[in-house]
Length: 336
Image: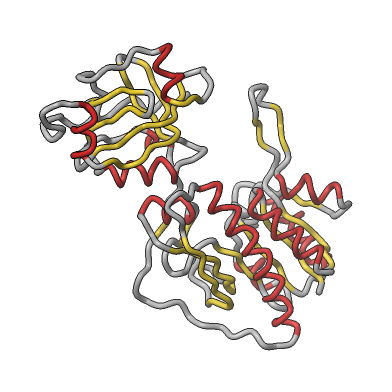
């Protein structure tokens, strides 16, 4: 099948490689324009573009696809390239641009989207992050027939993926990326034999996975220990989760919930319940125990601004932390 592929990050590259390996003819690739990245802020091509160039596949990088928008010349050039590809279908995965109606109508079989959630839950930009943050027990991949709405199109294929207690955004991303690649190959095979069934999304259970903003990195210690722990896993690697101690910003990399009674026994203190949110109850090699709005969180790995990630035991050798000190409840949003 002749395919146009639209995608930008690693999640999309995995699907593109799967389509290519399955023997589909990738006639054209659309990807976001090169962006400054790294310490030198040099322009860097997306993972999708890098792979496509290595395979000698034509790549277009319009800043917009709206013919009546800010970059009409980009959109017009893209329209010419898409029409010239004469593709059967467009596959879209984490592309980053809204597809206007003329794009949706151009391929013979329309546009299929690989979305990393069980729609209609977590429509939007950050479904993996939000599923972990919310404490969902499972997520998955939905292959969707795209329409003009935000992830509102009919479902074609759905597959579940359990979210493990230790899953972070990177680990869950990799599982879902592999699943998405396999499923879209299956979807195109079914499309070729006219055996794809379209199912409208349910009207109930709709949630939106808004993009994770940098201010969300600041730990709110008034939340429960369980909620903070989920955010630490969900916001890896960016924007991360950070807190402020004695005026210094510290990024929390790993933590887990501990039973308050156990912490009190270890410390020998009278009670852990009297400590305010953000207060440090214990600082030992096995972890820094911090009171939250509900429960105790043990930090086991962290990073000072400009420093390297390290275990708590190493961190305590160069940074004074003691019981009775406290993290601010709403620390500065800056992170290392």
